[in-house]
Amino acid sequence: MKKFIVLAQLLLGMTIISYGQQYPYFNQYFLNPYLYNPATLGNSGFNELNFTYRQQWLGINDAPTTQAFNFQYPTKNNISLGVNFYHDKTILLNTSALALGFAYRVPFSDRHFLKFGLSGGVGFNNFELDKVDNPNDPAIIDVLSQTTFLTGQFGIHYQLGGLKVGFSLPQLFKYSAIDTVEFQKVTIDQLNNFIVTVSYRFRFAEGRIGLEPFALYRKNELLPATIEGGAMFDYNNVFWVGGTYRKDYGPTAYIGFNILENISFGYAYEFAGGQYMSFGNGSHEFNLKIHFGKNKHKTEKPMVSYAEPVGPVIVQESAIEPQTTQETKQKPTSPVVDTEEIATSGTSAIIAEFENEKNEEVIEETDDEDLLIGDMDEEEAPDPNYNKPKPAFAPGYYVVLGAFEIYENAVMFKDLLNSQGLETEYGYVEDRGLYYVYNLHTLNEEEAVRLQAQFMQLKDFKDAWVYEVR
Image (tube, rainbow, N blue to C red; front, side, top):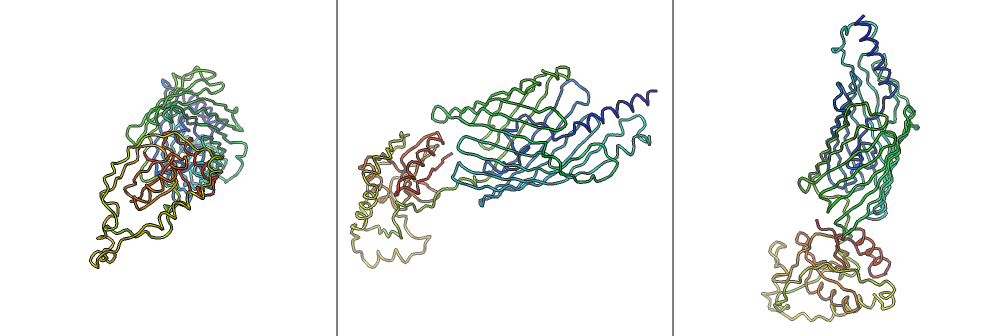
């Protein structure tokens, strides 16, 4: 009798599992959207590792748990590669899957792009027969043998400034937890299972405070559709807090922070509510993110801008008198661009005047000994900006109008723009050995992008770009 009851409970549980077999649910998908949508692979631009652990229905024996891991590797040619693995345990069923991902990015500008993603791999279902009184019973052994299935995802991701829209098929191939064959027949019948996400990021207080409302709609052919909405607040991209509400389920609270510059930790707690009130005391979810390497999506414009002098600039030490100009102090400046005013005043005149003044520079003749400078090896050549001011860039975003190897050229260009009503400053990029002349310093990326777009409408500043300093 006891054996019959255990068998009945097991088969009933398997029926529920098979009926509701689907890709695991994650609360902090906004921290690691690759879990659902392969098109978001490599969105950060950094090499990235993510670890997620989810414990459902605290206080219930054999309650579901999920562990997930993924690695993301973006490249400079708009291709991103990744590996995604998860292990899900529900009652006696263990499901594991490993998939390789590929995403392609179609850029329209730095913050406007469309991405497509696809992933594929294999998964395994396995029942813990050692927890059954008689695991050798023929009535269940055929049904409970390990099965292998094909897994895959498809996704589309669109981003315009702070707007993000995603569509994904998180489970391309149909499979069942209960099957009598070792490798299940591949069936593509998952168009009725999809996820749609949308969010918009607002920035306040010069970019230090962020607000990002978001929503998720999840359609499953076996279960009721899920609608979820919420918002996240963050301070200076260091600390965030927020929450969501899922229809017929209840609220979830979030909190997270950056442990180090490249390591962040997030925590989510689901409150036991709605139709799942009797399922334990809520659920925990933890997420650890590590990124490393350079940001491969920060595509600066070429170092020679439209306003930069064309061709090599030869500077001899004897031709330059020592200068005692003090280093210019950096300070945030507000945008002062009036597109109509600049267009009518003639930006071409600014560039022309700059070129004329350069061409009129007189290079004093030097002894043959001084001319040996040009014959020196590159590593022995003197620094043309030796003893010149080299102001560093403070963290933030800059709208750069020109880049120069020679200090005097940068100052001359800055002064000419200032004389035409454009408030500009300059800074020195040590690793590139260049002076950048910029119009704006701000902590708000969207503000910098908007100003860049205004400059790019003008013929002489089509190569203006946004330079980020972390």
